[in-house]
Structures are given as C-alpha cells and as structure tokens.
Length: 154
Ligand code: CO
Image (tube, rainbow, N blue to C red; front, side):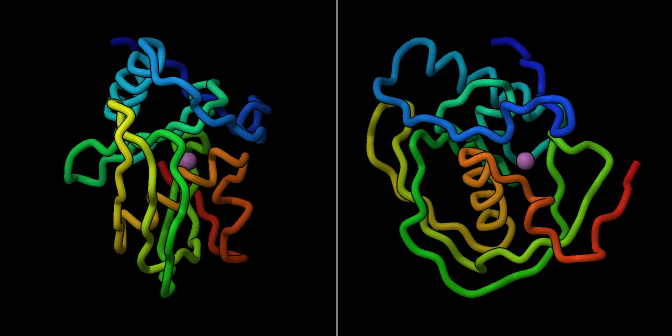
C-alpha cells in the first residue's frame, strides 16, 4: 500500500473531469482501493474518490466511523428527504460550508470481488455518499454550497 497525492481544486483540473466506469476489476483496481483507503485515513477524511488521487475511474472509499466502504461504479438508486449540514473536502483544504443533501440515499455498486452490493445511508453516510459520487462527475461541494456559508477553518 502507498499514500497517493491528493489533488487540489485550484491546481488540478482532473477534479473537474468525468470518471469512466471500471470495466474489469484487476490487480490495479485493488491496489488503488487499498491506496485510497490508506490516503483517506492518513488525511483524517471520511471519504475519497479516485479523481482526488488523479485516477478518472468510478471508485470511491468511505468510512464515517463504521468501517470501510468500497464502491466500484456506484449509482444512486433511491433518495429522499433533505438535510443541510457542514461539509468539507480533502481537495479543498481550509474551507467548510453548508450543503443541502438528501436525508437518505440508496446506492448500488460493485465491491472489490465484483459482487453487486447495495448501501443505504442516512445522515452522515448519506452526505458522504452524495459528496463522493459527485466527485465522479467532476462536481465539488463548493458548487452546491448554501450562499454565504463558506468559511475558513484551520
Ligand atoms: Co471531496
């Protein structure tokens, strides 16, 4: 496993590109998943998407304190409700802002073994799923931030 460099929203245009689906899960995919998890934990993040380490593939990792979730080719299958809370991003250091997200979301994806899985997320997990899936389409939370709520943090 190895740490990967986290791309920065002001410097790296890769964050604005659309990621391609994973067609075949191979050794490189698994190494990427391992590296992404290590990089996320090292940075004290709760989620990381492949474009954040410069790889335009539809892969995300999330851990909101309940263990690692690895998603390959994730798609939103259902969502409902609404929540507004503070959000940050490892690619946008030093800022947080309020973002409106669904209260509950259901995502379908493949796991590292190529098996179909379904993840249901509420509250923090729903937020993390939405945030990370947006990265796969080149969307950053600052695009959706509630006006006037962006603030600097240490
Ligand atoms: Co992010």
